[in-house]
Image (cartoon, rainbow, N blue to C red; front, side):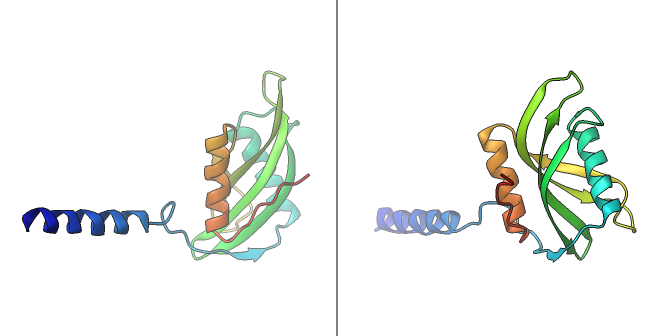
Length: 135
């Protein structure tokens, strides 16, 4: 009887564990259109955070949304790094700092390896910002 009870508890716990979402719960953002100043800030933040040549990052498709605490942006970037090497297109996500939501953009995640790309796209999807390939 004790073995049956132990097996039942183990099965219930494993069922609860498999029902967990793929990551922490994120607030779903309300889609917005970025201003040209915000796009410039995203470009500068991407260049700095991902070590792109400041004149070289090519920011592709961008999607953005407002949450209760700020603005999240998901997009694609490609270009040359500071060593002059080409970097293929990869997704990224980040946040604006400050009250004007146009300055201080920081990258909070980016693709590269398959696992990093999957995590980046998952964060965007769970934030309500579906990021489809830009090409």
